[in-house]
Length: 195
Image (cartoon, rainbow, N blue to C red; front, side, top):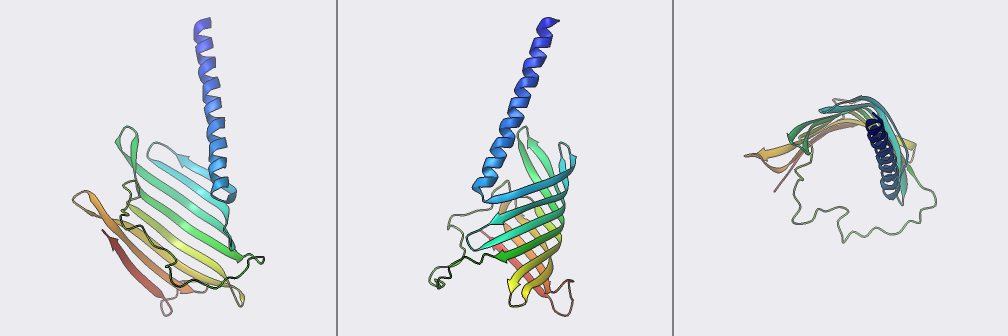
């Protein structure tokens, strides 16, 4: 009986040490990514799904501070093998992003000779990328002459597959200026990236 008690005590101690090490490593990763004030409310967690009622954090770049709130964030996955889950649907009920320009940023002339963003020439969609990402409502508040300008929209990103191989991504974005999605004043963007 004493032997079992000592084994169980050692396993509990090891589990506590692993949890503490995991939390410490998670905080280290967030700090290295310049993410602050990370908060979440976990609603459901099981072997096939995780759902958060709210996730929020602050991301600071060199030029701006971004406050990000995700409401009703859910992710479903399938286990294709023992330690290889494949993300299915990642859904967000509402995404709110507020960007505030930092006042102490020194403005330098824009270098238009280089593209703002480009993918490496041999880039491909990682197999771990979700099958579908769906944002039901997105609100962006960006700095402009009137203090803040608002944009509202919806986003869908879907993997393009051919014969079980991922060949690209398809993006659908609908956005309008203001607080509500407006049919008369709407930007619709359909884009596909294929290999």
